[in-house]
Image (cartoon, rainbow, N blue to C red; front, side, top):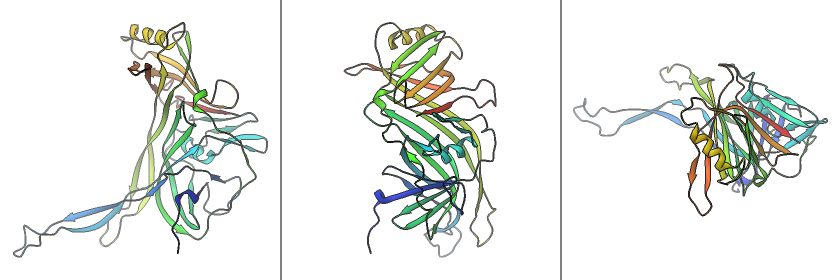
Length: 333
């Protein structure tokens, strides 16, 4: 008997429960620190006040179980597939956007225009812990957080909700026909393109994050005597996008001090919108571009350290209610 090391875990993302192929299943490299949990809901009652010989202990029973929580991080990388580019976490993005991805010879695009629905593609995740395999399904994407830092590598943190997880005999085979790009996107090369009131600013990024979140509601069977409530399905309701960027406070033409001054002058303006592109990994070449066409920008906050920096909060909005065009991502290869 031996212990299981988390660093030896492999994770497979699939759109099917059987019949695994390279088209419907991919292996995803994840970082240490992943979590797989599911909580029970207890009902508690006491007979202390009603009994002549009272029991001073509460009586408990399990009446329900929460949705499964699966959290993990992975590096932002792309793969070649028959001459087309795709991300390593392709099936996760399809589950989040309702198949809103498109592959090209030089890029991989993600948009949310088709995500105006309560029904999303099936998603199943297999966690292989040195031969002990857990199937997590059916899965719903609760959030993805794209994180970047001047001293780090660009990563995505995924939070998954699922109806249940079970122990199964085998995991999908390792598919090797896709060639994963060598190298990572470095945070220190990232550039913020900020266009506001016909004035363009190009600012080096110190760090930040962009989070895309879904509101997920669980639907369970009614509670029946001597039976545990069962998770029937989950429903995806609202979606939100928010983020923040940290840059140096620098003087000069089209620098951050000029941007701060212009925003202070416009403080009384309602919905002062900016067009923003965050180029992670550099302004050209291989990179991840996060495009926020219409963004409400919070008043920058100053951090008074040895070198003064400023944090800018971002709240993207749609062009019209229900347009779902508040954000687009493009992996350039």
